[in-house]
Length: 380
Image (cartoon, rainbow, N blue to C red):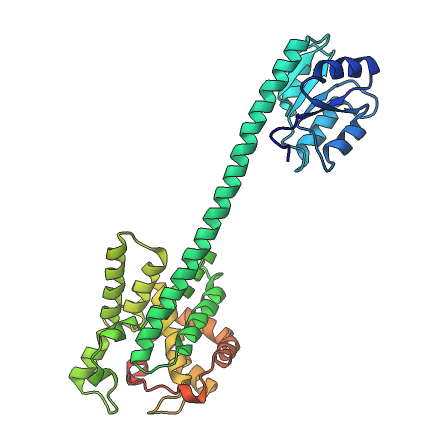
């Protein structure tokens, strides 16, 4: 980059020695000059380690014409921003129009007037300084925005996992449950993204937001009293009804967070859907609203498959975990009743991927949960 105190460098491209000598004499007091007697040499200099700040370019030259040189300069990433002024004996309006259409910033006809040449150069260099400043500022701002976006995304991830882990800790559940279900949801969504029913919804952005939102599916358990949440025996009917309120409590907690923020946040939209709707069933027998079919949000339907699969294979103090094959069989039986049939078909197509996720984020022996929400919530 040119230092503020250094003279700008002008590249003079002309095949006639007299023209070169004249232009160099005009420029010598205010500028450093470089010389090229043909287009090939001009392009080599322009693409060198110290490119010129501006180029004065003749049109009629042996080999490459000035027009061709200008086209090559404007096509190159390293040279496209160097201002080009044609200095030529070709004085027809059509010649000037062609030169400007190729990207030149100005067009001067010979014989030249020294004051005109200097004034035109000064104007274009001033404009280039402004352009370079704005380009550098834009690059700086883009870098800063990208950094802030990454920071916000990281903060979102930490906040989500902290909130989700808090809910799981109250239920003495390993944090690996939220990792597994997040990856199940993402894998299932990616499998379904090409399906006609889901392709309009399951974009890259939406799938990423679902992945972020999934850990909050049981956040409402924070609001369930300990004597119910941690009860070692079967739930009484009224206790089951209280346990079911975790879906509404979760949605309301996220709504409260949004009200505090004062804005709607994309990933919280899906977090609300998942928290509130993941216990709904395709046939309308779920809760809290008894929704059926496509009335259940896609996000909640995805989580239903993920959550049930993980509940079935996970070991708890009141049960041993089922085998992968047993869990697959139960989900398959729920096709069209508990679960969206197309989602079950997608699950069956990638069941090995679910198994791999379960193994990758398996609970340790010391992580056995004490989760008291009974399997009836999922499969009765």
